[in-house]
Image 1 (cartoon, one colour):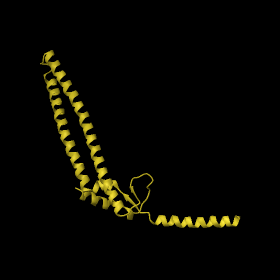
Image 2 (image 1 turned 30 degrees about the horizontal axis):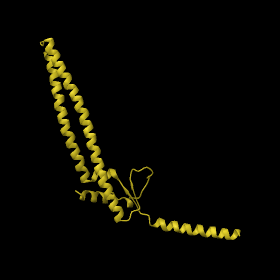
Image 3 (image 1 turned 30 degrees about the vertical axis):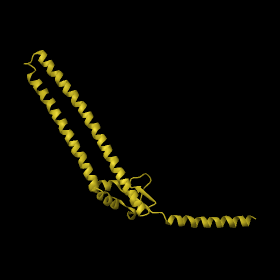
Length: 173
């Protein structure tokens, strides 16, 4: 009885090993390098440039506010001996208001830029995800990993699909 059990167990083991090899042959894995995509994609660069333009416009407004504060501060320093106490106090109050408004604007601009960057990143991420899914379905990939993913230590460049994703992404717009 033991012999039959061992023979069946051995046969089951052999068949299961062959089954695993058959499954492993159908696995197709790809790797996407997001850093390279960000550096080389024309669409990504366009999105990045749009964010820079928005940032520069905000920075211009902040610089104008800062210049106004600096001018008022210099005027106050120059005229402090000639101004009456009331006039000097009024100028200091005005300077304080402008400084608080400037700080408020800096906070607003910072938050608005963070929000714009977050939205752009989310939008680009969704677009790239759709493209990767299309490529995966079209070319029968079982798994596609991001190059910087935890646990991905090494991969052969033959499974890198970054160039294909960049091409497809740049053709979308």
